[in-house]
Amino acid sequence: MALAAAPSTSTKLYFPLALLACFILLTQASSHGFTADLIHRDSPLSPLYNSSMSHLDRLHNAFRRSVTRVHHFIKPTMTSLSSSSAAPNIQSSIIPSAGEYLMNVSIGTPPVEVLGIADTGSDLIWTQCKPCKQCFNQNPPLFDPKKSSTYHSIPCQSSSCTYLEEAACGTLINGDHDTCEYSYRYGDRSFTRGTLALETLTVGSTSGRPTSVPKVVFGCGHENGGTFDESGSGLIGLGGGPLSLISQLMKLTNGGKFSYCLVPTVNTAASKITFGSVGVVSGSGAVSTPLVAKNPDTFYYLTLEAISVGEKRLAYKTKSPDCEEAAVAANEGNIIIDSGTTLTLLPPGFHDDLVSALETAINAERVSDPRGILSLCFKSKSDDIGVPVITAHFSGGADVKLQALNTFARMDDDMICFTMIPSSDVAIFGNLAQMNFLVGYDLEERSVSFKPTDCTKH
Image (cartoon, rainbow, N blue to C red; front, side, top):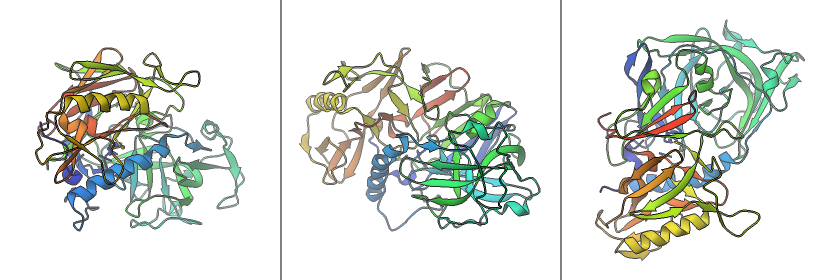
């Protein structure tokens, strides 16, 4: 079985390989949705491609981003925003940035192209706007709301403004006390503050022609900072909360359905993402598991019951306040599925059990990762070290059989490492584990489906 290699031509949705950050190009359309290409941030086809880096350097960077991204899932704070009406099926370009995708859309009338990080781990749609009191450097031009005929700020008495925890009537920009102002902070201390507004979003459509989506609620950011990349100008939330692009599309014909198919990192083919009813995952080999409603509703929570190494089944467990370690498979929503995180993160004790089982099953010399990120590595110049099939057992009988490319990656010429790491903060089913699966989200039926697929042919 082939191992995951450098992300030079890999898949961050979310996907944020690290997702995955990718460039979306329209490849297929119908009246029921659209399909687009995803080109990994480290692909030579990506505008973010750095030719001076080796493929191993790119993989190491992606893994480091996975560790940093953990903070993204530790209670981000929203302080004023809302949802609103959206429009029909849409299409855009997505380019990964710093482990996330960048989505290419246009805002306003006439439309101004903006690049925003496409993030399954957040909801708010926002872009940097003029006048900018505090902004990070960006390559695209700043959006100027004064030049758009369809821009309308939202009054603080509006029901939209009350969706947020600390909505405020403010005077941040124009001295208008009736304007709803928002503040949104992320777990890594990045932030955006500005005016909540309605604007026209122009994107591709199922016919391949641009479609204008009126009255999309978004944030016009006048104070922004943190870990944002200069290639982008904001963020497009693809999470499960009411403010996200996905949730706004649920009000229209898309019905809250999307899917993606991530090609292995060793392949140069583009990955695919599909929105609308054509994104439904079904048929022979498909398995489904419930999406669990939890707070915050931004994240996509699943229930992982166990993981098997070959025939050896290991029950999911984590530390609890009442006992040193306990099995918690009965606790629903114990893991987040995220296309924006490269590695899979598991509770330390459960991860230790996996490492012990793999060390027993694999006949190769164990070595240490010199960078200290990965806990289980083997010395081998061959890709075939006898990695057993690892099966993730999700609730509802969804058994997802992971191959070597989903669980191990070559980190050096003579070293192969396990791509699941321990984390006491949050459990995440990352994008390496999702490669060569058609992964479908149905927000109406509240389910996620997996179907083994050769994504190079999907």
